[in-house]
Image (cartoon, rainbow, N blue to C red):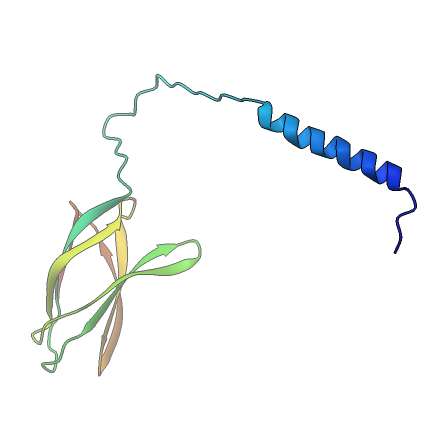
Length: 129
């Protein structure tokens, strides 16, 4: 493929080069100021530490897997997995998104799989069977 107009191509390249060099000399300053104060109780935190206390009934002496999920428009999203002790208890803390008011917990053992929806009250999740 040959270039039939070398002068035109050369002129276009020169103009483009000049525009690029000129653009580097421009200075743009953007500033924004706000006087609005957040409403009372507003927090910038996107997550919070949440206490978890789950006690399962029965059990065969082996730990159960607790899978914690958030529910959204696209379905469930895994937040964290934890195991109970041999007696079926789990006590700990999880870092959860601050906007959550409930979590879905799937309990899995060798002979059980249950799905529970648990409320988050006062930065705490409590469940006992």
